[in-house]
Image 1 (spheres, helix red, strand yellow):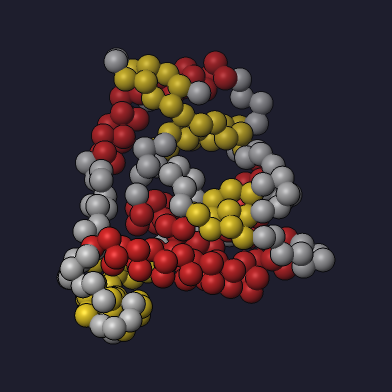
Image 2: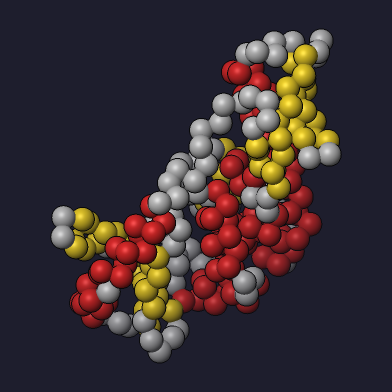
Length: 232
């Protein structure tokens, strides 16, 4: 859904939920979300959101000042890189082998080609990919699978970089997670995993979906906000 305010078109998402009043919120990714009571007609929602248009645009412009939140990485000594919500300084070392290690607040990257940034980037990317699959699998299997499957069936995990989504769940039960999540705190990764696993039971984002999500992870909205502020 969308509406025009001046020359600007603003998109918004409607979530129908078991509540008495309507709530309009703007997230750090500039996404506008309307939580409306079940059976509220779209005209009523559109009327309400148009009345709040000036406030909505003000919130969007506030979050726009942080873009881009994370500058493009140069893969040089002293640069900060995230892992599970913590920041580590990059230290590039010459050596006969190529490897990446975490040690006392540092990302230690050893390479035979110390001055080649693309080599350092490639080593870091491979390291992140390996850690992503391990950490995501550990969280899924040890914390969340048992809550969603009586037979303890484990969805297959696929890790890849996605431009607009943190995760998705296919009709065949394949859980795809954004590789960038490995840079976020574990509780934020938990939120994404739980959100997607809720789709095993409810395919859409209706009121029953959010009731289930809140029953398992009552603080999900805070975690979603934390994730967006950390990685946008």
